[in-house]
Image 1 (tube, each protein chain N blue to C red):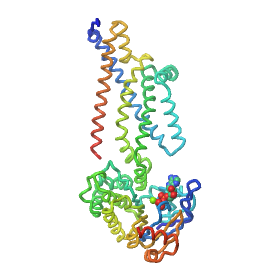
Image 2 (cartoon, chains in turn blue, purple):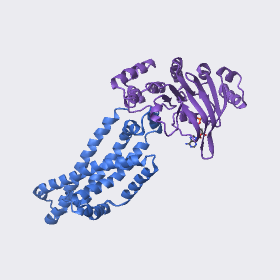
Image 3 (cartoon, helix red, strand yellow):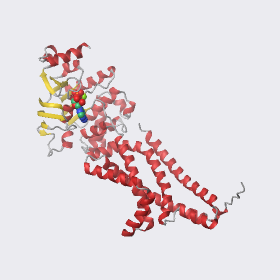
Image 4 (cartoon, rainbow over the protein chains, first blue to last red):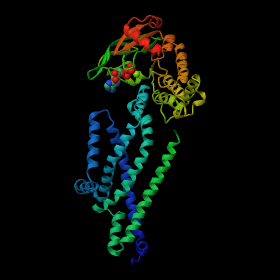
Length: 219
Length: 242
Ligand SMILES: Nc1ncnc2c1ncn2[C@@H]1O[C@H](COP(=O)(O)OP(=O)(O)O)[C@@H](O)[C@H]1O
Ligand SMILES: [Mg+2]
């Protein structure tokens, strides 16, 4: 193999990599923060005794799970985004959050349904309202079961954020493409970018593992 | 205390409760016995509306349990329920299991709820177990915590659905003893049980159910020595001779 590595392309453009990584992280973080309430509300909707609410939540999940994220991002940017003047940055956050929300809803639903029915019955028979029983008894137990799949979902979200470059958001992936175009050093650039994504997701999974351990103690 | 009037319920074409009528006066203890599938759980669970009914009415202290106008959460604070499978909250300590409803439903101050909860657990022989989680307790201990949890709301009525059926034989006694002690306080109780000796000893009435109907209601002495119906004779022969 006669390939001559030239890592100087990394040092020379380090400021761009940092900027891109920062933006990717920021978009992922906002999308994540938004996707959690979306997912929890939809997950609660899925298990609601109100048929209409559970149908509505199920319909949301089916639609947003069934559309490719790339198509969803383009649709939000070009259709919704141009109607509401969202711009690429907000469209990206919204698209990622709506998409991840559908998956988180399923995780939350499965978590709630994994709590034995007797728990709800015991809570209700002591006079708690449905909302109190959910908040004090069911969700804290569901939470422990939700954490591991939730971690995977967060990691997927960060990786999926690399797609937002299609609507012109200057994220890590788009900086990478630009740097490759001018330097022609695709091996070094893409290897480095892969490493950055890995470091971010690995750090996140370690943080979540810490929480998993912490909450496991009490049982 | 409880009046059950012409209550019926079915799942599809299967009749689970068939025109049930029963009065349970204050401070009385009624045992609900009968073969599995008779509808005992369905009946006792419908007294605090864990189960819906399709016909008839159930009144607890004169309040219609299944009426839309009734504040069911309020009514349930008067009714303690003990399940066969304990249903303790696994993420909470024994003491928290006992204090949660007083704190969150009755808005009792946590300090007061804890003092009371500890006293209750102690009265059931569990003073050492306050800070343990349900997973660390034996079945008998768990069921006693469940009884303490129900009593913490100061109910006027206690319902037990086979409280000892999930327990190993050596733990049955400790739970039955707790219920015996409770009987001495004048608590109104309905107990679904297969413990015939216990039913005979502490209950004021035996209610025998089969196939969704109340077949016989009698004083324990009479029921066990001289059952009036063939169905009850049959049942007793089976449970006593095994
Ligand atoms: N959700 C349900 N759907 C259909 N049938 C049910 C349901 N719950 C209970 N049943 C039926 O109702 C009957 C009475 O059940 P249950 O009240 O649990 O009896 P018991 O407590 O006396 O053993 C049984 O035949 C049971 O199969
Ligand atoms: Mg039963």
